[in-house]
Length: 459
Ligand code: FHN
Image 1: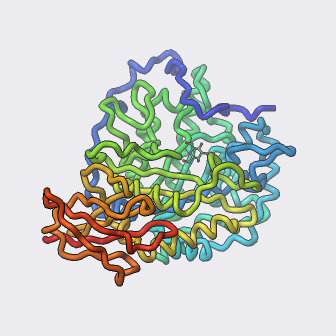
Image 2: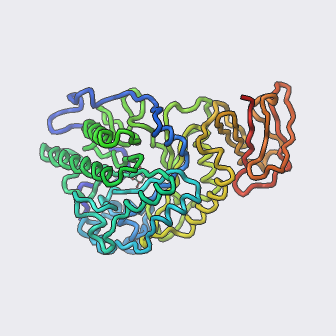
Image 3: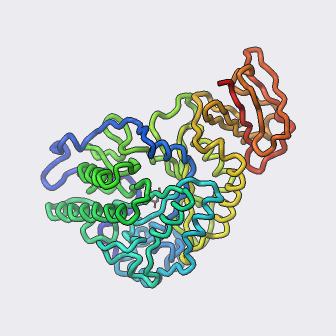
C-alpha cells in the first residue's frame, strides 16, 4: 500500500489553490507578500561570517542505505515515497535504529578540523521520524533500541567547539495522520490545521530543549495543501520568532497568496535568507553582487542526501567543494556540504577524507572565506576574488592555464602580497598601462586544490 498523503515527486505541484470553498483571493493580505530588509543584527552578521557549513541527513532511511528489496534508489531519504513503502512497513525500521557508534563529540571534532563554522542536522525529515524524544509523537528515537536523544549531544558538542547549530525541520510529514498533501474537503483542512499545531508545538519543543540553536532550516514546503494557506507558513515563522527572537530562518518556510514558494509577490525571499540554491550555484556572469543573503548546499553524491551503501555516479571531491565554496563567498553567499552518516552513526571513509582534505586547505586559506565577501567586479579567468576590510584574496583555481594573471586592483594601492601558506614564494609584479597590477605566478607550484594570494591594499 502506498503511504498515504505523500507527494510522488519533488515537482512543484500547481493544483488550483482551493481551500474548502475559499479561494486564495480571500486570504487576508497580511499573509501575502512582505518586504524584508537584509538583517544587520549580531546573530545575522555571525551567520554571514560563518560562510562554510556542514549538513547531515540522518534518520530511519539511513538503515536502508538507498536500497530496498535489492533495488538501488538515487535519493535515499526519499525511499519510503519512491518505493511506495507503507507507513506500517516503514515504521518497522524503528526497531532497527540503533546507531551504537554515534559519537557527537567525534562529529564535532571532525567538523572543527574541517573548518566549518555551522552545522545543520535533520531533526525531522519528510518521513516524520524525530531524532529527539518528542513528547508530541511516538515516531521518535525514544522508541528505537537506541532510545537516546541524538540532537541534544550534537547541540552540546558543536556549541562547545564554537560551531553554530541549525535545526532542519521538514514541514512535509509522511507519518503524521493529520498531514495532508491536498485539501479536498473541510475535514482535510481541519486535519491540516491540527498538523500545523503539531509542527508549531514541535518547533517550540526543539527550541525549549536546545535554546543554543541559532537557526531553523525549513524544507518540504511545496505540497499544495501547505502552499494554499499562506497563513500557515506565516504562523510557523511567527511562532519560531516569538520563541527565539534572534533565530535565523531560511525562506523555505512560506508561500505567497498565489502559492508561489519562498518569495513574496515582489520577488523578495521570505524570512532571513534564500536557500534555494540546492545542488546548483548562481551564475557569476554579473558584476553586481546579490543583494539578499543566500546559501547554497551540495551533497557529495549526485542527488542523494541520506546514506547510500553504494557510492555511484559523480562524487564531489575536495577541489570541487572548495571551488564551490569560493564561488559562493565571492558572491556573498554561504555554502553547506552534506554528508549522509551510516546507520551505526559513523561517517564513511570517503566523507572523512573529504573533511580532512578540506580542513587542511581551510587551515591555511580559510581567511579568504571566513568573514569575507565578494567584490563587484567581473569574475577573473583564473578563479575568484573575496575581500575582508583592506585585504583582497585571489583564489587561483586555474593556475595551470596561466603564468601571468591580471588583477583588477591598481598596483599603487597594493602594499603587500603574500601567498597563504607559502610566504617565501615571491610573486613578481608588473604594472599595466592602465595602472592595474599583473602578477607572475610561474614560481607557484601546482596546488592540489588552489593557492590563495592575499593582497593588502592601502587603507
Ligand atoms: O526533499 C529534500 C531532500 O531530501 C533534501 O533534504 C534536500 C536538502 O536541501 N531538500 C529537499 C529537496 O529540496
